[in-house]
Amino acid sequence: MVETEDGTELRSILHKRHNVLAALKTEPQTKPDLVETIDSSRSTIDRAISSLEDTSCIERQGETYHLTQLGRVSFAEHNRYVKIMDGIARASGILNSISREICIDPDFFSGVSVQTADPHAPESALKNSIKALKTSDRLVCLIPVVLSVYIEVLTNHICKHEIEAELLFHNNALESLLEYYHDRFDKIDTNEHVELYVTEQDLPYALWITEHDGRSRVDITVYEDGGVRGVLMNDSSPALQWALKEFAKYLEASERATIYLT
Image 1 (cartoon, rainbow, N blue to C red):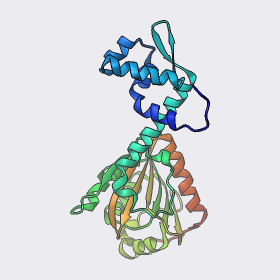
Image 2 (cartoon, rainbow, N blue to C red; image 1 turned 90 degrees about the vertical axis):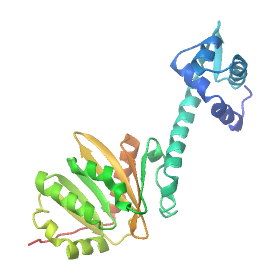
Image 3 (cartoon, rainbow, N blue to C red; image 1 turned 180 degrees about the horizontal axis):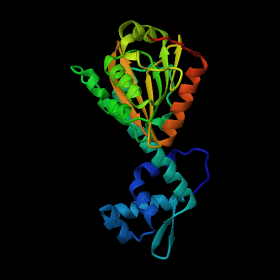
Image 4 (cartoon, rainbow, N blue to C red; image 1 turned 120 degrees about the vertical axis):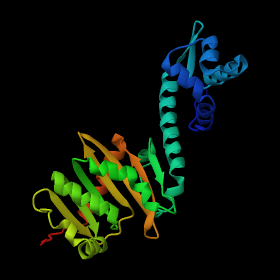
């Protein structure tokens, strides 16, 4: 392989011959093995082997082909890219409802699950998020708007199980909460296990970090024109780390909300 700083050829080969690299990552194989494993013609395998050898991604030892270090590293990174792009494609119907000034870590989309709202029943998209909320041991949330379905589940769960919760409201959302749902909070002791924060900074989406039996997941509820557009869900470690940093960023610009409920 001729050394070059331009990865165009390598990227093209990785995309076109991804299935061969995936097979060799599992174990070294001969050409007949690859024909059977990939269920492809011998001529196709011959062309794939030739291009992968030309780019130094594989090497031959006897009749068997192995990934080189270059091939292994390149395959891993390309595979990560494919998973991210697949997730972005799944979320494409929702993403443009988020301001283009807001940055979501691309790693969040690797393995993401997407629930797009039904225009005739938009809150049905919250079904999985509410299920996670009901079983959570701990909550960390950014709350830009108040939805009655969330408030009922949230307050019931906190009151019944006395879970730890950090709830950061947009100022308008908190005011609406106290005006219309004040009675839902009359049993919550905010001094012991619930911490309320308020901010005037715009919150681009609702962010829910739920923890249950030591496992965490992240839900992003996206709104459009005041209604639910859809939900992005991920329980991966990169998604959690990004979400915690995102919450910390907004928390730093907030202040503690002390509310006396009677």
